Length: 336
Image (cartoon, rainbow, N blue to C red; front, side):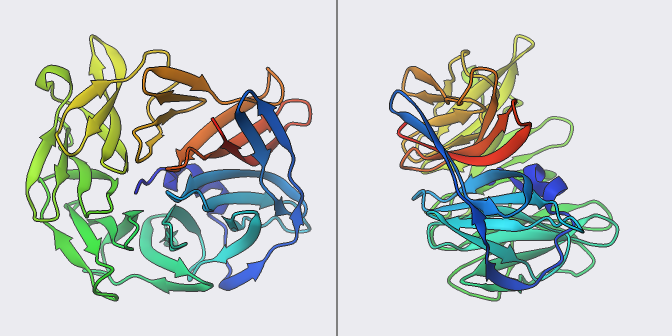
């Protein structure tokens, strides 16, 4: 699956301090339709000031997000929508952020230490949150993605700033091992359902790559084998990213089975945000399906919207900024 939201929710979720799980009294949603593409707001806790949806599992059932709730003391709940049912995820440590969710509803996230460093990765399922094992408690460790089996990948950074990849295999609960990846690991885009890991290495001259379940590493190059491509998300047997070409950032999609790369339509609104198992690419407010670019609808032309993630059934989740009320609301698009 993909990992697209840790940076998006950090601001809203950093003050979360609760443990366990609870149902949330919710404000009702609304819908807007443009052609076959339909946007609907997601239910949120009462007194919510702003909210956003930031990840969706491949089936489209589970959605992750966050909110700012204005009461006597502001709170920053971490949210899980199971279809239309809203649940508040209560992590094992305060100052936590959400990262990803799979089709079984398993959520992964990271908690910050007192200095603000993401150091404590955790797993949540069916109301129970547990810390994941580490190689060394002194290292800064973050989870980056989870697949349908429940395999989790992440990154560790030692006090000497040496980085390494990590795998928490679903087949061996409670264990973690170091992944053999190219040196100078920068980022992991995610892990596919067959266990293929996609990442970026090289601090001065970055290179994207895939690592097969058997440990074979192959480079993911740009057009004409150009170097410097940056993979950012995975879905199905696809990965997306970008590269500088002629001084301009160009969106890319790789077929992980063949390594072939495709330059994305320049009409996309932004760099690729996500990709699903059908190869449909999400880029900000736009989608590329085959040779067609689709714009996500908003209730009013001046309203701001943004997509964060796309499911295999085409469901897109993100936010809607209502310029009339200045309200930012978590939303889901279907039928686009």
